[in-house]
Length: 382
Image (cartoon, rainbow, N blue to C red; front, side):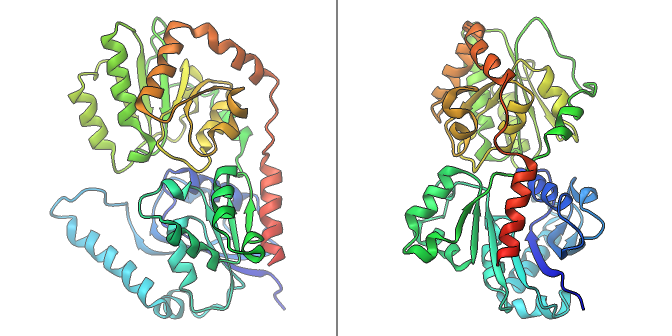
């Protein structure tokens, strides 16, 4: 008799994003003898695919890379994918009968908020969990009424205090309150500390001017447009410095065009996607988080671990991670805020010394082991 818990996990793909990385880190640290897991991807794609443990069964709706442009020859394939996803969302029985072979899952798990309707629309009487990685009050289209739909899940895992407060504020009774559980993202510090020691291969750092690095998926959410506008403004004011953006995403070409339009191609570099951003992190003088909104910015955790001088907009999770400004400079969530932080770094770099001192002896309160154990306790408790 097989007593393993049968779990279905759903996510769009395993491309380069915080939620994707966190999910794979979690899966790598799960005991294989306790669970039988099917991971269903909309698109079989992404840098984290090879990292999924062999005992986890990967299923998918489509293969190939994500189509982010509207080139004429790509439109039919893009439209076919969208149509397919709409059909299986509207008629979930087709998916469960054909792709999932009527498997009786004990737990169904939406690994990102965007999979809410797919999991809640399941024809199974399974227990259902969602993992919220973003401050939904900042995400377009998420009214209080929309956010309240998440109370259809048996457990709502949130990754920061701000998101936890948002859901507690919308809960109608004690039963709904008890569904909310805060679990910091499981992240493997040893992995990126060792990766940071590798050589920088695609860029030569200019030691005579400070470099500001920002790392993330190139979406409007990340505010790279604000970062480049601030960069141009500071250059015009005579402050010599460089900016490096590491990452890829559907907004990449727009941001690259903006960089040219602003006339900063000589001083701002877009490195694109790299398997290992950590050596660049290590070599840069300052780390900038220019995001408009976040859930719990994984990248700040990495910057703290690598003991960087940090400038961060006040978004969900940033004050929590930076100990309310003890470990890095928190600035207003605006272009003006980013400008004031970067200007301070250029005029008075010594003012960041207090953060460096704090980081020397700082112990992370959120460890990989604690996070994984807490998620396991949620799964086992259902």
